[in-house]
Length: 400
Ligand SMILES: *Cc1c(COP(=O)(O)O)cnc(C)c1O
Image 1: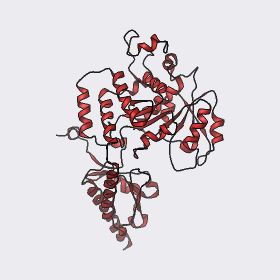
Image 2: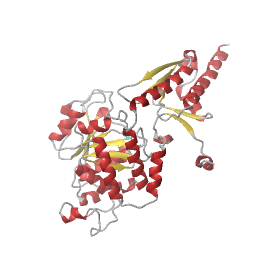
Image 3: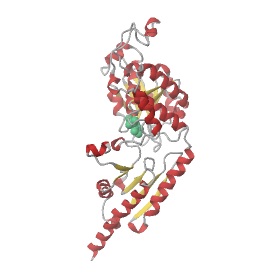
Image 4: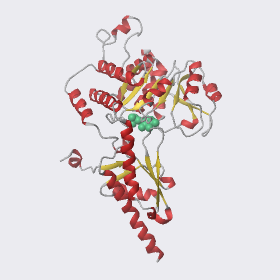
């Protein structure tokens, strides 16, 4: 009996992509092996993080790297690091923020649902510009002595201040820039692109296309900020006399170790760190062109099963090495039901099928192939064709 059978929880087919609410991605056997091996022996987590950090630094071109409990955790930790630096007194103080900068500048075009992680660190978001247009001088005018960081979320859909300019403005005032690149891989080149563009801390999700443990993430960037992240994050039930980093105290860099920080609630275990490292290495070694082809043929097979007469029009979407998707536009008249009704029926069917609902408000279903395994494309196509059919008959019935 599988664990899900034991628990009485029915599995589903994931045509949404790496969404946390339905379990993210499948883990590769080699990632699982690394996690199992890691679980059987004890190590100092700070040493393991440093070793993982070297792999991440190598992969990203950054000075240093770190494994977090996801990209959202990474954004929160990066924000905290920008507020306090490595000062243990300030680290202990968060989320109260006397004596430290606490504003994080964000373009209004880039407000998004994960920026709560910035506020969760104790910071206040300062929005600049209009919802559809931002100018550089507005970013500049928002920076003052309370500014801890700028947050950049690459949305690619609206005219705004590009990253290079955003970084240049922030750096003119000594302000670091955090990039939330959680969803920016693939393309694999983006592992390096934001660091190359001058960002100070870049955050990636480990549990999306990189296919690391679901609750893992990557931060990379300036060594001093990564060190501050470690201080906020690690289990600090340590004594200065025996602490791994006691040389920092001896050389006067730190007054002493901080206590448990705001990031202690976001811990990662040795298993996640090991799994993330192996997933990242495997991701770097993938044949990315072959991935693109496989995704495209998966979508081709699904599109091939859908008849235009069913009241659907399909459209392939792809761009710049991202995961291609299939948009299924529904004709409300022919289908006789809303996209939301179709989605609900697919979710409750047997097998349960989940497709992306972000555009359901426009009567469009979006199919993402990244989490589909062989054979599931057929099930998705058949289920879609089936849920559209009875609606067609029902429409006829009401006509007579
Ligand atoms: C998915 C996502 C996150 C959260 O990533 P986790 O690894 O699940 O914490 C944060 N920001 C953006 C833009 C995302 O797409």
